[in-house]
Length: 241
Image (spheres, helix red, strand yellow):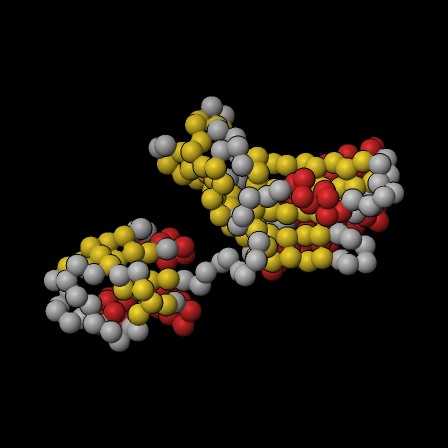
């Protein structure tokens, strides 16, 4: 009999397929189907404790049997979290905010979150997905990161900027997952009594974020895809010495 096997997230990258159609013995268990792939892709076996299985779009016991024409999926842990932000660090006293999200980024809402009566300006820098790279048409982007470390470093950058510039509060939010052309991938919002330090801190903030925060971008074209080369800050490179 034939079954259709689907792969998502990191399992898709390990196997190199979004889906596969295979022949199995009648009554084959889901676990035996998984073992077939795990024998060929050892990284799948390493993930076994965190994977769940689904049959025909319902969670299923690995010991349950498959039937002809079934759709079977191996599901890695989901990334969403319970709210808008998957990871966040908020400083209630200073008012700073740093987060990661898989939802659209709303820079105006971030500004309203930060603004106080003493602020005379806010600057919102937003990086957006453009439709080409050096003339090569871009279809969409995907971002992934080392999430707990990324939000921690964003908070460290923000705290340092608040000490270095005459600003009120700062927020940094980076979006993960698929980003369509024209959508915001990252927002840096700075409030201040005066505009000059707000502009300066926002510029320094995005520059440091791009060099220090472990976020990776994959660009998808009509004729292929590529992880975009970046560059670590010299201070990071020195830690390897």
